[in-house]
Length: 147
Image (cartoon, rainbow, N blue to C red; front, side, top):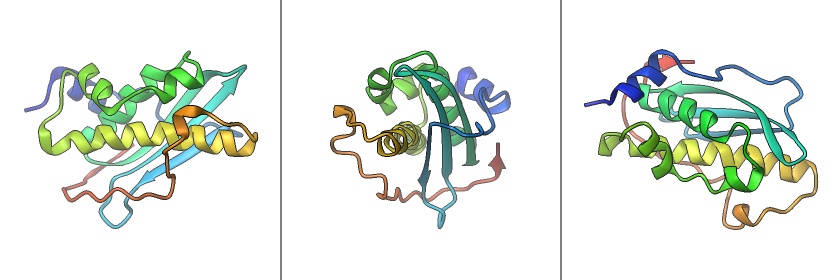
């Protein structure tokens, strides 16, 4: 049901933790249902130098958070904003259809952290044009792991 990459990123998630004095912090999810992703960015000269995450949710939520952080380190803000949930899922060699929403959350967590950075620094990014940080995702499945 799950690819080896999903299991690897679930069992050995990359970039777990917090960044003190992060340049951008974003949290997405639905506390009522349990999937919550928090992402921290360190940005220097428009480049994402470091990224950490904390995710409360199922294994797929943890794996997609881990993979998304790996995919944006060293990238420009614009490149990170171009990251799609499908790219995250493909990098993990696919997700079961009922878990695809986890990759959507990972994409939104990245955007949410960049949105926070943009707001703090009075910046505008085209990739955030239609992004609403207060939009809640509504998911319904079991949750039992936290990283």
